[in-house]
Amino acid sequence: STRTTCPDWTVSIAVNTLIYDTDASIQGAQVLAAEKTKVSATDGSVMLNLAGTGQGAEKAAVGVAIAVNTLVGSTNARVENSSVNRSNDKGTDLNVSALRWGALATAAIAGQGAKEWAVGGSFALGTVVAMTEAKLANSAVYASNDIGLSSLDASGTLNGAGSFQGSGKVAAGAAVSVYTLVNSIKSTVEDSELSAGNDIYLNSKNIAVIGNLAVAGQGA
Image 1 (cartoon, one colour):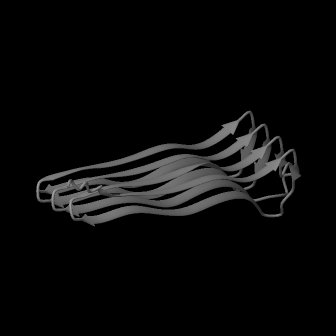
Image 2 (cartoon, rainbow, N blue to C red; image 1 turned 180 degrees about the vertical axis):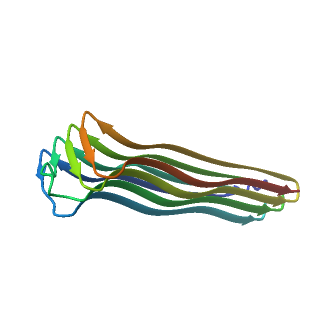
């Protein structure tokens, strides 16, 4: 008689998706403030994603781990079609600021062991598409002190894939780690009249720390 043994196989899939829209705005308004006028939009997110497989088999083991993290969105602080402190005795400052911060970790690990053959694969995919903007458009602003627009995107990312297989005859594995970051950070003044007693400043800053690692190890 002939005995056929099916491989011990496992698939692990973890998917995170975050779509956001954070907005603070003054639109079509007349603003009179005794002191400061501040428009501020802040978005913060932490995303952790892990997929793992582990098999031990008499004859054959097959495993695949897939982890996917996706973040898409915008953070906007705006003054549009408005007048702010048109009277000279009103208002000291106008501050328009947009801030996005984020931490994203994506990991996929596959581990297989068998007497005859072991096959495994791990795939970690991280994607961030973000827009951060401070904007002043079609407006008239008077400030006895400062007028300032600032935008900041600060993010940290760890992306990793590992594949480890051991067998008596054949061991095969693949580890793929891909991280994609597309950022737009803007501080903009369009078609506006500004009068400040001190400074007018626009600041845009992007800070990104990225770690990406793929490791595969096999023994037979």
